[in-house]
Image (cartoon, rainbow, N blue to C red; front, side):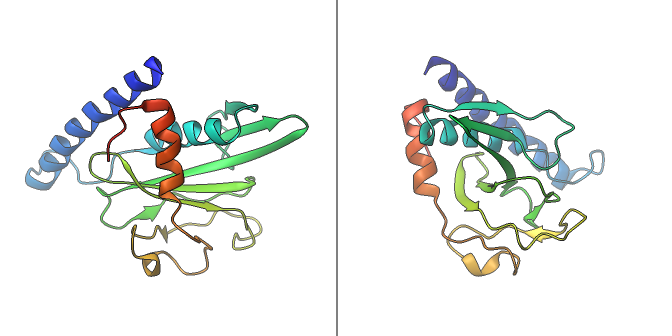
Length: 176
């Protein structure tokens, strides 16, 4: 619990710095505009979610060469791979990074400007993926407005309450 609380504190401090950088990007020509990578924060939250939902499983992060999955979950004889995609409120377009084949579950996390999760979707149907290439330029839904996500991706219900419940178990003082 101490380690997860430490990581959560670092995320909170990072969010403050992120806001300051975003302000600089919006007000100065000296720094390019653009969304900073928030994927590691989303993967951290997803790892805690998976740890909570599969307490007897072994979880392992994939390496940088793994394009189709980020976390492997091994529970007994069962092995499944999860790709995590994270979009933050700092991204005005909400475009998801390319979605590659190779996952059993696709988890999409939407973070607010404090880098706290506001959206969490689990997709198990990969039939929307093209056969031989990554799916690009797709948009995440806005939490509370499911009609805003790209058509063709079966986002389903926002399961943010499930994610928050898992985070409470590990982080304790989790806030939103």
